[in-house]
Image (spheres, one colour):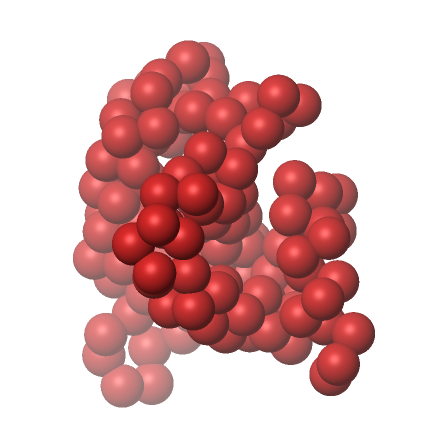
Length: 129
């Protein structure tokens, strides 16, 4: 999975796949969605009982989720944006991405170096705010 010629994303979940492997974008997204679902379902990470404590590494887990979700946006913008424009759906993608980026900025969820593939788009979102 790539985001233009300079960025390649490999998959590793640290459990079943410990060493990052090269996968297609659809496979990366499949692995990612399964992995996120497992994180959300894990009550030791996302407690469901009222008053149950969150683990000390909670923010790191959330940051990893958002970093990996950003990679999907980066791939979509670099590899599929023209198709999205031809379908006249770019406003929907841009709105979703804008909300995603504003949320991640508000809570410091993605390191700036990770955002490099879409830096120009992000700057157009952040500057007005």
